[in-house]
Length: 50
Image (cartoon, rainbow, N blue to C red):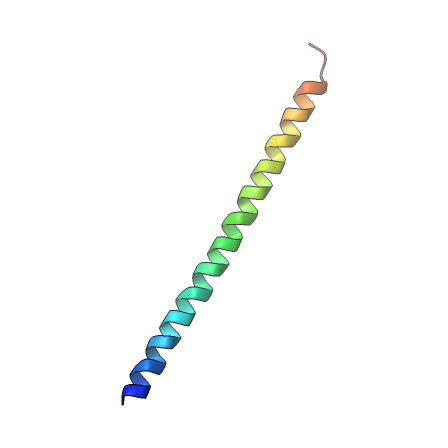
């Protein structure tokens, strides 16, 4: 009985870990993409004559 409870607890823990890792990866990708867009906009505004 104890092994079953531990197995279920481990499965919940592992599932939450995978879920949070995927969410963190997507958040990181969005952040990198936003930073690249920001850098592109900054460099294009510097190239235009004033």
